Image (cartoon, rainbow, N blue to C red):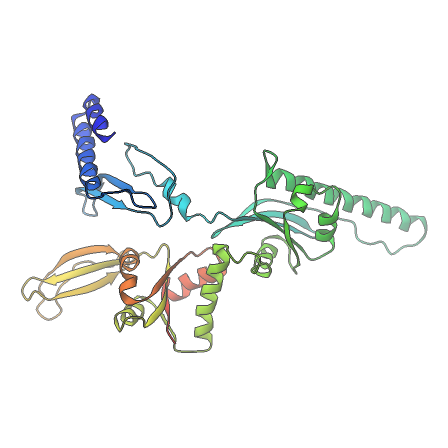
Length: 364
């Protein structure tokens, strides 16, 4: 196929583009020769010209076997690398639905992997209980019952619009939550779609409505959602915070402290925790006069004019990569497990803001 594409590239009018495409195809063919068989999980190869930080062009070829089987075949020549199929591998397939309903309104949301999404919400004003007697009390009671019924009906109809597509339920399970009897009334109502009724995993009592209620419902359903990455992440960072709370001495945080613990001995750090958007560069430097090498880590905006503090000799940058990429490639050398987390949960956001987005739990 690549040989055919190489021939087809002759039809590209621009000589620069034509040469770039042919050069990339040649590089990919050379990579393929290194593989006797396709790896069990498939093979991904990217090749193209990128712009480096100093504005120069550089041809880059990346090849790897993904951590999950990739059931997708694609050859594409474009002005960017297409990673959609790889992103799909990172998604947690279990998508759970939530209905948060109380006397103030109703919220519909989902939780999938690390992503919590609000799909729809509406508010309601229901008449309060009437304290007068006689005919007036009967009339108000009738109006109140009618309003409640209409509210539950609207919630049931909206649930169908939100959670059913092409006559199929779009979530793996449904959690109903609220501070009053509405959740039970909705779950048991004849109006509520039978397909959604059969998808109910749990009904939980919460003290708040809206988005705060959604957070409470997620926490109270954590055992049901134990395979969901969002819950796993909350538990992991929660365990890390617990080590800090009891001052166990089994924790490290920040770049310098974490790297020192990793390099102090294999297995010292049991679990390495890193934020997925950790924006720190790792530089390997060499002193041209002495041949001595050292490593420096910098955040964006920090100066990169590296010099030897004693001799004031300029240090050569031998290697530059993101710290996260380096850790992802080398964590096994330190006998550690690595967990990549987001800042989408309350715990994750606190880990990023308060601890710099990098830390670890040490072995006991």
